[in-house]
Length: 313
Image (cartoon, rainbow, N blue to C red; front, side):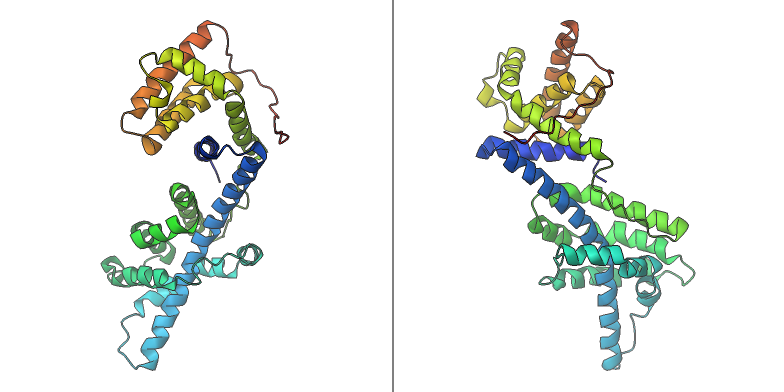
């Protein structure tokens, strides 16, 4: 689930925390594990949100019946209440057990968020104009993309729930949409049950932090050689960390091509630093990369096992 760019962002957050709090590696390793676990809890929470919308739909239908209102909500029954994807989530023992084990119930005291999103769905013209022949899962994809993902109240709610969830939101939404599309094709609920694609990705994340942290002062001096017109304290903290992380990949991650590392950190800077940071970082890293290569200090494409996971410090 977590891709390499997202892992890099999480390591950036940990390094920033270390820069501010001077925490030990053990504390930061626990923080890394905690944030990745919270990422998966976010994924399960977002999946279960469909069930909450279904429950709210049923509640509104029952209210109308009790008050003998002319039913104007029945059009949602086929698309929401009878939706096979939502029913599969509702019936999933894995999701239910995971929610219970990890005590996931973020909406317990904030059910108004669910009601507000339901109101948007209820008032959506494209749903009212849909025929019963429309595929409910295809329609649910449109609901998710246009009404749920874009809801500012839901976004703010998640922002307040856990640190880092705002950064996780795009990747979570991609994962959910992929599940919807796969279900639309196969009518099988395929739940990704792992946070990392494989063990190497988790080791990559921790080694990226450890190597950057260990060589922090060395990188500080190296960067200063390429920014003579800048005092070190004038370089933004995020920019400095991104430079150091990329140098780590240049020097210690032999199987990651130079341009891959360079492009990743330039792109990350566009989201997490100032408007001019990407060009600044790109220029500095290109010069450092060229000189280190010319000096024979870094090599690439040599396959080896890089198992540095060490929590003793």
